[in-house]
Length: 175
Image 1 (cartoon, rainbow, N blue to C red):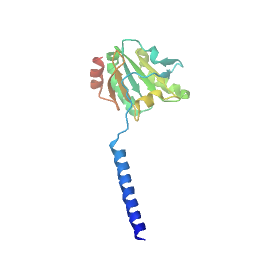
Image 2: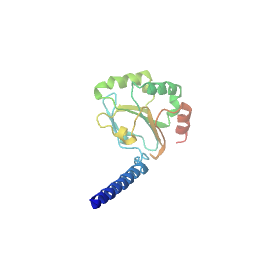
Image 3: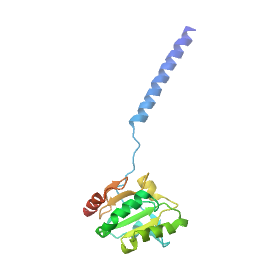
Image 4: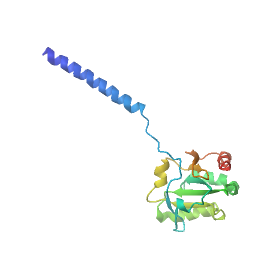
């Protein structure tokens, strides 16, 4: 009987050590965030039902990718603040990608109309429904999400939420 009690204590002690070891292993390893250093391959359906891919982007020109939703109040606020400075983005291609379903392309057309994006041919808008490649690539949790790339397609800066317009313009000027 004494042998059995000793074995139970040893087994309990070893189980405790294993449990503590597993807990430590889980807390010390952060999940690896994927690299967003390069412009990803993407395919967007524009408000005019035309597909746009990263191959359509002008070579040697900086790219600003804005992941947004047409009905997002933060996105609308950002666009209202950007409106007076839209011409200052003429040296880059601005890709505005959303996740809305293709049956909701009218929302995208209305968004382009409301912010007069047709006056700026360097502003491209489209939905990536149903693949969500950009959303997964950037691990977008909230909109707007912004990633800025230089002329060689290398990441300059990424924003998990809308920055101040002055900061955004300063970053765009550098590319």
